Image (cartoon, rainbow, N blue to C red; front, side, top):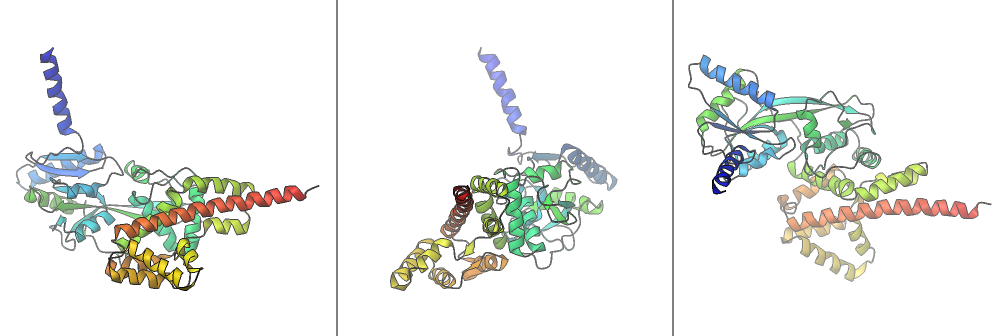
Length: 397
């Protein structure tokens, strides 16, 4: 029995060695991580081989590290033994890796860190007819949808449309990759975002980058030169007025808390609202963005006097370690109440030079506040409508 078992183990080990995510960096050749489909990989590999041969260069073998659509390709760059190249990573992830020094310079003028390898135009669709989107905290296309919608209109109007879409359609997937998978399957003729007349579009960029500290720098640079020479990669020109990564991460936290984590209550509330004929007051209550300062802070401040201020300062001390961040929080909480918008998110992301935003305890507290507020708001809408219905039934002859 030992011989068959030994043979099975050897075959199993060989299989594991080629599975996605395994470390192939000890091999000779170029290691490229991508979620692009087999046809694209074959076409690129053959084109690279032909280009090297036509220029009299030695052949370079490519080893693919294959991810599923929606997997975090940028996470490969922070592994102990990363691949040489990232192909098809979202622009936002590549920008983040650039700032953290994880990418090496490219041999393309105008693109010091990464170049555009694919740019798609995602069509939009009227509200209520879109694809179910994934958790915006984990899926790059989902947060791109949301940002575009909120930018096109007033923040409150765009947020209301997102609540409507989340409430009246499929459950939002917590796993990443639902929209990204549609892109990889060439379903770009299908509408994937939400806009009133369905005429809008969203630009979706994927890039190529060399990982810093690669074991095969010359081969990696040759591959990028091949892409540029054949028109498969072009310089990345930074978009003007691009919103900060911190602000977008807070937006993803907001939408994840109110639309994903509270979606059970949202679906129940939307169902009751529609059956009641969508009364305007309750429709507004259901789709209004959360307030700043959060509702729990407003309740404390309603008490007034020294006890309220003591509680406020104590809470700020629990969620912000730096004195400057605590002072900023208290000052912001004492301002007039307003609903969350991009201006508020920008202020939060820049507070104390970004140190408050980087406080894990502050982010955890803020997410919990937004989720609790959303659940309470959705339940309150149900109670108000059901109480009104009961009142009418009681007075009816």
